[in-house]
Amino acid sequence: MKAPKNINTCETAIEGLSALLTPDQISTIAQKAVIELKLGQASLETSLENQQWEASAKQAHRLKSTIGLFTANSLAKSLDLIESGNDGQIHLPEFREEVVAQCEALIKNLEQFLANC
Image 1 (cartoon, rainbow, N blue to C red):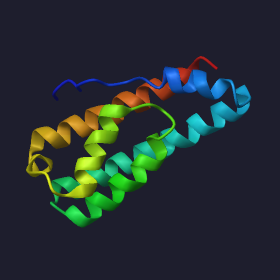
Image 2 (cartoon, rainbow, N blue to C red):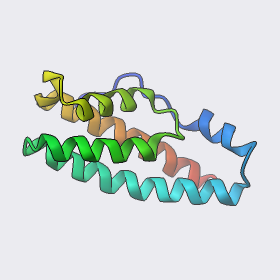
Image 3 (cartoon, rainbow, N blue to C red):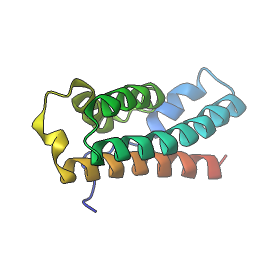
């Protein structure tokens, strides 16, 4: 699997949230985000593999809602491309691999954060 490009960790976003929320609230958000990301990533990967572009666009939109708090800019850009459906690179296996790697990196960062709570 190709290494993800420009993965922004969620640390800055978590730090920003800590000024507004209690540690328990942040932990709850991170736990729910991990679940949603894992399910969404699997669904998106399947849709992309099966060239189900409309389903891919809908799943990309849902994932964008989940990652919105975590400053995952490169992942957000990839999801924008999928959602728009207007870029031929979304058809490439390398693109799909990169999106999966970006999701996995964010999940790993959130799981590390939760382990340190």
